[in-house]
Image (cartoon, rainbow, N blue to C red; front, top):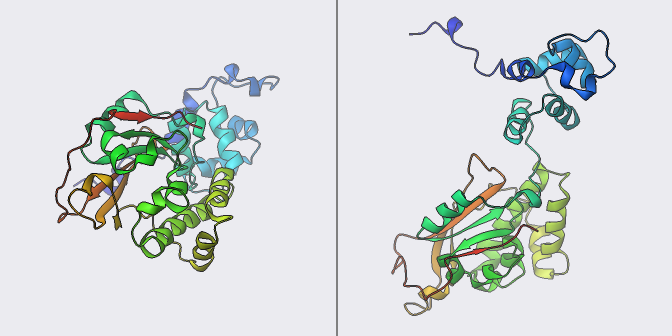
Length: 286
C-alpha cells in the first residue's frame, strides 16, 4: 500500500504548471514592469491580477475562499487558458463556470453523428434549452422541433409541446418550472435565464400561477418518467406514452445537452415505424 504521505498531490500543481507555460516578456499586461523576472512568479502573478500575494498563493493551493468571478477571469486571461482550462479553474476555485453563450453552441460533426446513431428520439440543445439538432425519430415524436429557433422550455410550457404533455399541470409544468428556478438560483446573473423565465411565465395565467405556487427547488426533471402523446404511437393506442427523459453532457462541450426520450419498458411497440423524413434537423444557434 502506498504511504499516504508519498501520494502525489493531485491537482495542487495545476496553476503552477499553467504559470510555467507563460513567459512574462510575452505579456502586454507586464509591459513597463521593471525589473521583470524570467519566469512568471507567484509574486508577479499576484501583481498582474491585482490581488494580495498571500491570497493568490491560497488560490494555487486550493485553500482560498470567496474567490470572485472577476479574479478568476483575470487569472485565466493572464495565463492564456483555453476554454476547458478556464472551466477547470472555476471548479478549482469552487465556482460554477459561466453559462455558455448561444453563439458558442454549434454542435460539432462528431456529436451530430452520435445523434444520428441514437435509435430513440433525441436532440441536442444549448444550456438555455434552444434546440440545435434533432434526429428523425425526435422530429416524428415532437414535430414542433423542426421549426428553427425552437426552445424546449417555451414549447413545453407555452407552445405546441404543451398539448402533447398528459397531466401537464401536475407532472410536467411543476418539474420544469422548479428546474428553471433552481438554475436561476445557481446563476442569478444570467440574463439569458431571466429572459427565458419571462418568456414562459409572463402573460400566461396558468404558468404564472404554477410558478408562484411551486417554491420547491427540485433536481433537474431529467431522469423522470412522464406521460406524453406522440404521433408515432397513435395507430396503436389513444393513451399517452410514458417516457423517461434523460440528458447527457459531453465532457468536451459542457455547454451542450443530448436529451433522449426513452419509452417505458411496458410500452409497445418500442420503436414504431417512421415515415420517410430527413435524418436530422439542424438549427443555427440564436
